[in-house]
Amino acid sequence: MAPIRTNVSLYNRYPGKRVGSVEPFRTYYIIMEGTNTEPDYFRLLEKRLSDLKIRNNIRIVYLERTQQDRGSNSPRQLFRFLQDFRKCQNDKAAVYCMVFDRDSYKNQVNPTEGYLNFLNQNQKSKIRMIVSSPCFEVWLLLHQKNSVSDIIEPNAKPIFENARLTSSFTYISKMVRDVFGFNPKIMIPEHFLDRLPIAMSQAHLLTTDLHQMATEIGQNVSEFIAELQFDPRKLS
Picture 1 (cartoon, rainbow, N blue to C red):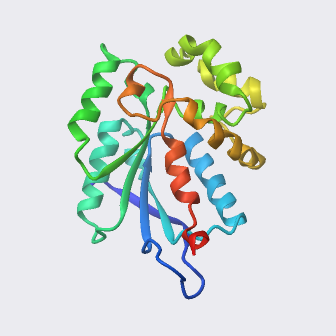
Picture 2 (cartoon, rainbow, N blue to C red):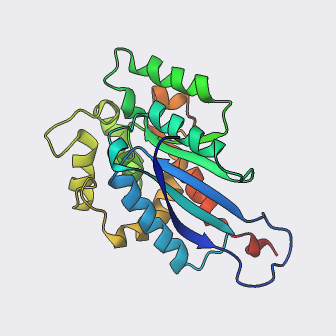
């Protein structure tokens, strides 16, 4: 198995006897392509869930590549790492997730074909794919009110192409800096998650279909977050 460290994080069991019919305790194992933006965001998301006292009876375990494998972050490599890890676990109820960008394929001869081939080859696996198109920063842009109509749609072509502008910025990361005042490759301020309701309310305006993301701007991060925010106790 590829050397992977586990980092147990969010752990939200019900504090007392549960009432009503709820999902059993479940573990999410997550491996991410990014080493800064995505991990920073999900750490802040955890804190928000904790502050809101959401108890969804889940545990989140981050899978971290060891130093010798830090450069092994293509979707295919992440998928193989996660598959190998899954085979060693005795947890049939667990959810195994990989977070990556459609942009990972943009330097291939045929980016659309490469991305779709990866999806089609692995769509029947037990691995859940959390994808942003072109990259995770498009999800960050949704945290700005009216960002789809005011920012994303008027700039759809350069956003989808997401060219590298400098050693520090791609087109979208610079756009995030210009809109919010921070470089997402370096840090995301804690107060940024106060904007999460805005992002969730606008998420439906972009496609969440993995195959459509081959040629469209989109994300299904919102679906994953909606699942994490769901508190079955409210149905009792």
